[in-house]
Amino acid sequence: MALAMGALIGIERERRKGDGVMRAPAGLRTFALVALLGGLAAQSQQSLLVFLAGAFVAAAALLGYWLGDRQDPGLTTEVAMFATFLLGVEAQHDSGSALALAVIVTVLLAWRDSLHRFTRDVLSGQELRDGLIFAIAALVILPLLPDRAIDPLGLFNPFALWRVAVVLMGLNGMGYAAVRFIGPRYGLAMAGFASGFVSSSATIAAMGGRSRATRDFTVAATSGAVASMLGSLVYLTALVAATNVKLLMSLALPLATAAVVTFVYAAALSLHVSAKLERPLLAGETFGIRIIFVFAFFLGIFSLFESVAVAWFGPAGIFVGAIIGGAIDVHAAATAIATVIAEGGAGLLAGRIAILLALTANMLIKIPLAFAAGTKGFGTRVSIGLLAIVGGLWSAVFVFP
Image (cartoon, rainbow, N blue to C red):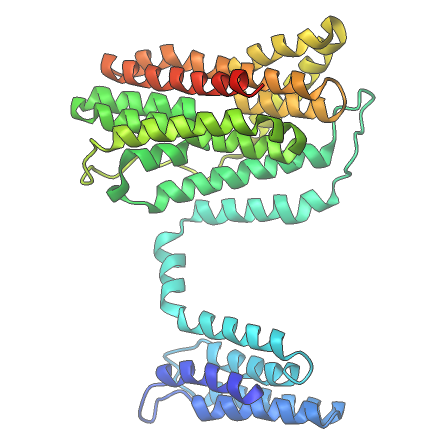
């Protein structure tokens, strides 16, 4: 196994070592022997021998670097050589893990040009910073937060609230990546769907402005606006799932029906869209910290509002809060409702109807927005789609109560 792994990594290095006196010092044979040396040292079960063999490989790698071509000051081959020795040692204890790591090492070496090009030419500084922020939020902050309510009302659970924020950041990042890399071939529908993860209202406004600027793009812009609704529904589903899975299961059929209606209508519009349209609208930043704070603010306000409404007006209070909150931000309102249901503030059926009311209010409020932002044809087509979505939601409720 050690010999096979050394040969695998060595084949990749052999292809890059070059020719002549300035060639790299290590190739197929060297890497195969280094891995074999590690395996033999480990088989001896003598720690001192493993240490001495490792020291020899490290010294040989450094000597090769010192005597090598100064035009390429990188340490990739030298580090890979020592890693190959360690993999040869590890193969005697856990061959499966060692083989998987050897494949990863080879992939990293073979994709050098692609990785360099992506890092230098494709990935922007803002995208890198956003990726690091997401990693800190998901892998550092989230595990440290207490998973319990810490306020007297039992509403503020830091872990649950931050988990939703992480989901928000991840979905926004996915939407941005889709818009960033799909290119012009797939048209405004794909761009609209991806942008819907950020804000379907903003997407409708942007697509409406595009229809006014170029009348020939009215149908294409409409398909993007309607597709943003599908992205918004997917986004809403993920947020509710992160808060209350039981509530999501009760909403599965209405949301699925609305999603199918949205997809069919957007696809029908897209059939008339040319594949040679100019590059679709980009989403801008991957996600903004301000968006996260605004969402968290609305979520906290809506959660408090829903709890107070239920306490003052009974179960009917959650419906009033849902309509008002949904008209402002359906994602925050739905998450707040799911949180209240999870904390026992209202029943599952009341939560289901409340979220449907919030979604309905949010869809209906977009009708005047579509007419204000775009042409009459754009507003009419978007309104048909919005009404069809609302019809799909409630038809599933009445047919399968």
